[in-house]
Image (cartoon, rainbow, N blue to C red):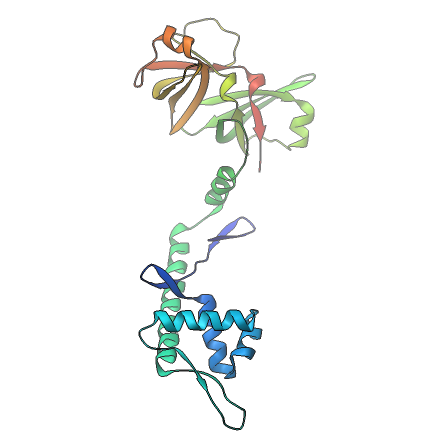
Length: 270
C-alpha cells in the first residue's frame, strides 16, 4: 500500500500469518491481543481498539481455533470477578509478531532508500490511475509552445524521441499554466487515428505521423484494433474498419504508419 506525502512516496504494508489459507493473525488482531494483555479484559480491549465485544470474541475464538495452542483464556472468580488474559503461547506469539513487524519495517525502509527520488514514480502512478475513455495516453515533456492569434501549437517530446503536436486555445495554455520543459500528457482517441502505408512520403494534412511495427492486431466483424510500436516503449492504438484492415493487408510484425490531426490531441497536466 502506498502513501503520498507531497511529491514523495512512502511505503506501508501489512503482515498476516495464515494457516490452511486462512488469515488468523494480522496487525489488527495483534493490537487486540496487546490490549488484552495490558487491560486484562476483553471488553476493555474491544473498546480500546474500536470494535464490539461480540466481534472481539469472534476474533479471539478464530485465533484460538487456528492456533496450535490457545492464545487467550478466561479467568474466573477473584476480586475483580474474572477477566481475560493471554496464555504463555499468546505472549510468545505477540513477541514473535513484533519481531516480524520490526524486520518488515526495516525492509520497507531499505526499499524506500533503494527507490531514491520517487517523484517520477508518483507521476507514473497518478498517470495510470487516471480514468479516461481515450485509448492513447502518452507522457512527455513540453518541448515548444508557439502562440497564435487564437490557438497555440504545443509540441510534446516523448521518451524515445517521438513528438506529438497539439493545437489548443491560448486560453487552455493559460488555464493549464503550460510552460516549456514541464511534464504533460498527450491524449488521443483511437478512432481519431488513421492507419496507412508509405505515409512518410505522402502529402497529408495531419500534423502527427508516427511509423513503426504492428505489435497487435485484433480483428472484429466490423472494426479492427491496430497497435503500433513507435519506439521508446510507446505503443499507439487505432480503431479502423475491418474492410480497411483487409484492404491494407495488415499483419502483426508488419510496418505501418499512424497519422492524426493536431486538433485531435488533448493535453493534460498533473
